[in-house]
Figure 1: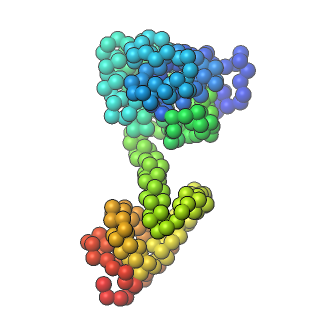
Figure 2 (figure 1 turned 135 degrees about the horizontal axis):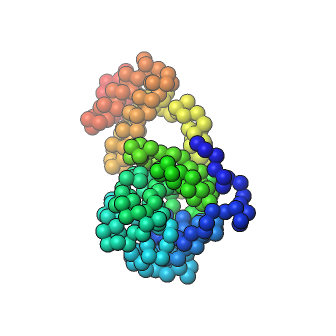
Figure 3 (figure 1 turned 90 degrees about the vertical axis):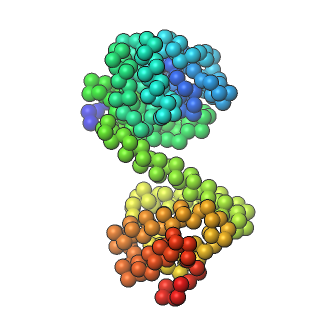
Length: 317
C-alpha cells in the first residue's frame, strides 16, 4: 500500500480541501463519523433522520446542523455519508440517482460492510465519486463512538483513482484503512459479524446463566476472564483454546448439555454448534487428542439428538 501523505499531523496549509459533509441516515454510525470529520476541519451542513432516536443522536453529536430530507442533504454537501441499513442501501442509491439528487464530482460514501462500490453504480453514472468506508467498530450512538474511532480499522473499497482520497478520509477520522476487494466484501463482513455480533450474544447468554446459577455480579466475574480470553485469542489464535472441549472432557460436556436443557433449553443448539466447531479446531491443531475425541463427538451427537445425559466417557448413555 502506498504511504499516505496524511499520516503525520497536518499544518492547515497542507491539509486536503475542507469539505461540506452531509449524512443520510442518522443511525448510530453517521453522526459519529460526521463529528470525527468535523474535528478534522470538515463542515457538517445537513443530516437526515426519521425516528425520534435519530433526531436525538443528530442533535447530540451534530448540534446546530439542520435536519432535512435526503435530497436536500445531497444538495448541500460535497461529501455525503450514506449510513443506512444494508438492505436499504441499493434502493436509496437508485432513488437518489433517479431523482437527480446526485451531482457530478460529489463524493458519495457508504458505510456498509456488505457492499463495495458496485452498489453505488447509479451514483457513479450520475458523475459521483464512490467510496465504501466501513468502520470495524460497534457503535453506541453517543459521543464515546468518536473516541473509539482512534485506531479503528476501516474496510475500504475504492476505485484506484480514489484510493488516496479514501485513505485520507479514514486517517482524518482517526482510523486505519484496510483494503478489501469488491468480491471479498460479503466474506469480510461475515467474519466481523461472526466475531463481534455473536460475541455479544454469547456474553449475554453467559451472564443470564450465571444469574440463574446465583452469581450476583456476572459482569464482574466475566470481565477479567473474557478480557484474558480475547487477548490470548488475538495473540495466539487456536493455541489459546482451553476448557473441557479442547481437553476432551466428554463427561463435563455431557453435564453441561444436561444442565442447559433443564435451565435454558434455548441455549443448547448454540452450545452444541460452538462445541463442535471448537472440537474441530482443537483436533486440527493437535490440542484435542484423537483418542479422547471419539467420546466427546459422541456426546455432541447425542446432544444434537436430544439424548445426552450426565455420563462420563466409557459409561452407558
